[in-house]
Amino acid sequence: MRAALGFMLALLAGTAAATPTSEQLHWLAGCWAAVGGEPGSGEQWMAPAGGSMLGTSRTLRRGALREFEFLHIRDTPQGLVLIALPSGQKEAQFAAEKVEARSVVFHNPAHDFPQRVIYESPDADTLDARIEGQRNGQSRVIRFPMKRTPCPLGVKP
Image 1 (cartoon, rainbow, N blue to C red):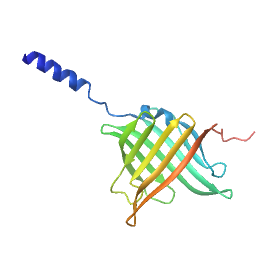
Image 2: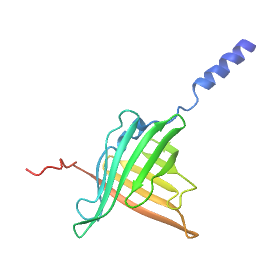
Image 3: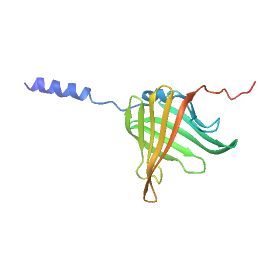
Image 4: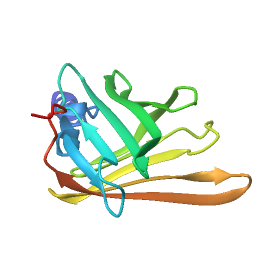
């Protein structure tokens, strides 16, 4: 009886959920144009490799760069971490709170704003990014709808 119980416990332990990895975010890779944004505004994510994904975002207004951000999602023994370095601000880290088939939620309750960074992709051509949290005692949500676009080579012929 004890042997059977020990076997069942070992089997259950082996089926425990594995720590999420950047490979599970393969759907995020590629180029994304901001819906309603000026051409050139959006995000670009490299495919997962080496336990990480690298991304950039930029916002253009009237042809001028208004904001940019360098992003890094990396695998750690504790799970996924998003490291964000927005223009003119200090680096911030957000731990993955929830990872599903086509969505990920990163969270840092100690960060000023945002406290959450969320990426959801209902289909292969749509990316809904948003940041949310408390700012000056008020709940705030900022949405960044995007559509998949061909990645530019960065070189004009």
